[in-house]
Image (cartoon, rainbow, N blue to C red):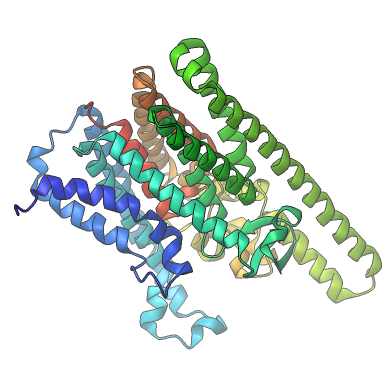
Length: 475
């Protein structure tokens, strides 16, 4: 049997990386006794992919836009490295900490868990995302196979989350101020579900892209049973999306999916006629989902405030209770974006040119730029009762880059997004595949207004897989 050539190995690696997403994201932690794949399995494969790309660099035949993206992203990575080297105090501050949970740790463990190590890891993830982009955009694997691999990944993640919601294992919920552990079947009556080992923003972001990929698979499937399965999976996906209670994702998914349906109705009559039942049904379900998510949020918010006011009225003479109420209000306030965005702007002002450093947002709040933030009472970290409550993100990819990478980094970032969006738009009318990719990237970029999904490496990789498909050479 003849061994596959390196190009074939590269293509197999890419498909394998996509299929292994659930292990990195979910399964390896839920069923450790059955699945013992390392949590960094994807990273190892991407490094191998990078080595193959280096040896075959001359044969890649990159397009101009691919070169633009690679150049801009490389400059962004170099800028991040420069800012990290200027923040070496992040190591010493962590080593000399008096935190009871850290004092007894060895120096090695303290360095390993330091903010500077976190920043280095985030930079490494961007480098790996660049490798993944180059691999996807130059692969000879057909787009249909890549989409099928993404569908397999999505199905596994959907089924795994159904398992989480239906088992009797306790799941932690967050209903504004109060945190409690309850049975998962009460999910629709308490608060946003924090699925074990899975951040809800990460999950909702992934699902918002997969809904469009499911639709593409539906349009290309001729088998009626296959269409029925994809239709059922799409409904299940929206149900899981509703469980995350992500208002931004559910709203944007409905808006973009509806606009796509209108586009097909006006410009692509054949696509509309063949798929109108699917499109109309999904739009209606998304409307209901949005009504549920937004109504639930308002109800939960009102209930939380009234509960806190009742406590305040009944215990006005108890100082300890008053302190607890104050801490709860502070915690509740710091979860809102009118706390996160002014914090990011304040951090940006401390170093407008280069920013506070890639991956050093949380460190700057807690240590380096703490005094600058405390000039504004509502932004002062001292008013937050637990260090773990300090957010590690600005809840916006744009404010995050502004704070961490300054004017230069934000310019490179926006330039990069401009190249990607323009490429997606110019190809959007060629065929339904290109239309789907344009809808996905627009959905991602709008979600970025209120979510910092790049801090999660899985969503970072997924984003660059889609970008790689956008800039992939025509087959």
